[in-house]
Length: 396
Image (cartoon, one colour):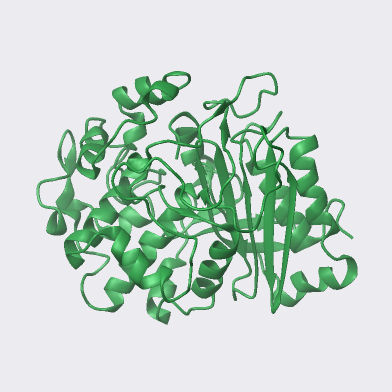
């Protein structure tokens, strides 16, 4: 996640619940097709002022793709289902699922302490890693500060300074050190606050437990078996997006001002997103991953139950959202959908669906603002979810 938008947004990416059956969602398409969703995409360009927007829906055995605007302002090329983009905090769902699989394999317990696996790393300045559990990392109840709130990151990555520092390199250990330079937000287990540092530590624990890189674990556990051919975690200081992609534009943390200038930030060093926001994927691959997850194909029932114990962030996050272990829920006017969202400089995305995984929507925009909307593209995604799952707005 970006820093400016990242602190405001770090708090911005996920959801909550009502009781509606998947059949109720699907029935809307029998009445009106995908006109409402396409209208929401069109409005992302004409109303929110974004460069481009795309969405893919998987509903039972059918797939639909729609797009509006452009993938590249210089060439006016259209967005394509194969276009890759940075998925931001949706990375967290992959990491949480790895840890839950490791628990199912009896290689760790979610109630193990951080100190047990990373001795001496989270210590001092009010921190005690022996009192923080893996579970508290995954559901953001650890109290560990977000490294984005440290003085040096606030100075170097906010506003125009980001353009000068976007190729800076960080190791996971450096990110943790930046975080613990800031006092804890609260005692472990006594509050909730979205913190990318939690998932930096989660990724480090995966590597300590397995003796392999986080990238290798994600590849072997999800990318290969699910045939996610467009999904990967960058390694080292790789600043490029490999494979087909457009360009990505940022207003450097200004989320709602139509007059603010924007910049091409397609190339950047995502090392600060290790474990928390650095992965690259496509709308199709994200739909495939979340359908498999929601259908219970990636985790045994016990771990699924753990993943879906939801925390209520209250006013500390996106309205009408709750957070589990790397998974979120969003309350819509007609019910609840589950998935995750991600924000990084120039690219925001959402992937949500019905609890049985039968019906999912994955969407991405290649700009990090929305004219007149305090939460940036969240307003665009909410309109898409309402149109697709509830038939609201201009849908059929």
